[in-house]
Amino acid sequence: MSHFGRSGPPDIRDTFSLLVLNITFRTTADDLFPLFDKYGKVVDVFIPRDRRTGESRGFAFVRYKYAEEAQKAVNRLDGRVVDGREIMVQFAKYGPNAER
Image (cartoon, rainbow, N blue to C red; front, side, top):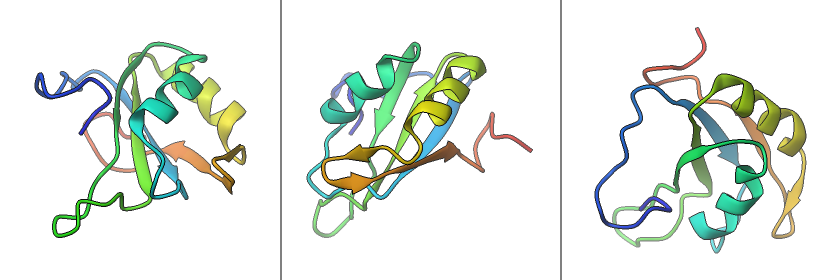
């Protein structure tokens, strides 16, 4: 579920997606949103869940409206300790606006 609730998925066609690795299983979209929102307009925060258990799979996607803001977040947050773990932040390799 995204940070923005059950009102349906946001339009992510013209967004830039970051992959956030090594988050704890208890980290929520509400935890990540303020951390990433400091660097620009966050369109969505999505944490994939295991289909059987409903638990976090240990990674997230954070989507920005502008590439420059996404790059700033990568530069500032990659390697930062969040909830006791060092996260890795990079541009997602797949999707409509992934870097080729």
